[in-house]
Image (cartoon, rainbow, N blue to C red; front, side, top):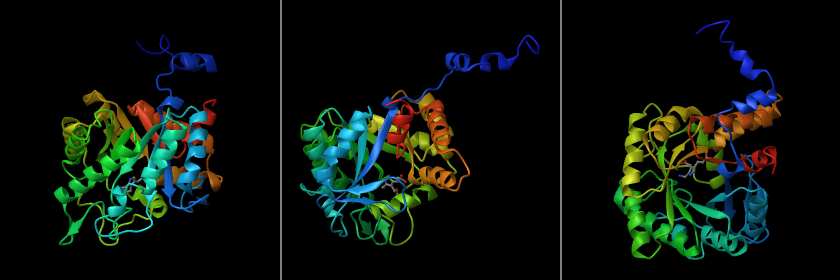
Length: 324
Ligand code: PBG
């Protein structure tokens, strides 16, 4: 049935009409806000590479969590910057590590807020790699042991969800087993299942002081040219016990989000990463685009592609834009 019986503009004729037929709608419930924790007292330092983001000390986390919760955002994702680094990344599993301290503070003051902890060694190792390096390569299985140990320390501090972002093979299984053996049956796992070796992590590596000191991450993170492998990665993580699977980054990888959502039944998260965030901020600052409109369009398109959960540094701004 063609023109003029079908005129597509009829359903675009007013704001109310457009609302009536709208498919993808981002809600505050979909958002996760990342936070960077660093040791100290009363420390709130702007992160140079990421507009509007701060390094916060654990004692300021309760207030920050309260702000996030008051906007209706259901979850935060914690990243830690340790005082000391070593070859193994041992500060990652310290009982009084920065992430562990921040988790305790948040769960004490704001128990309803979901605390997700990023689990990786790259900010903790002197090499800046996501695991232990042996003979110039990241040793997969040795790293999995350390990740499981770290996951347990996060769970003991009260984390609701552990989010491994290292891309070692089999790590979800190691973590799930370790949590079960220690009685943490209800601690969930959100795996960075399809995580690509992306240039869009640039601003974050500065923020987390986690750039690799030699080489790059292409030996463990995925090649952006591949999508079938992403399905294999996700399938393996679900088999090993992941409760939520993530695709990262988001904007260049909307096809992967869509395939994942179509193929798997568990919730799919998308990480709208630092470089994507700063592209919009930088363009807005240069007067090239309307920041709020670009932000909402990007978030809506990530949702339309199939994301159930969107991790974004825009979470607070987006919540306000959505009426919080
Ligand atoms: C750690 C990690 C990274 C990001 C999240 N967790 C960086 C990396 O893999 O190099 C990137 C987040 C962002 O860019 O916003 N492995």
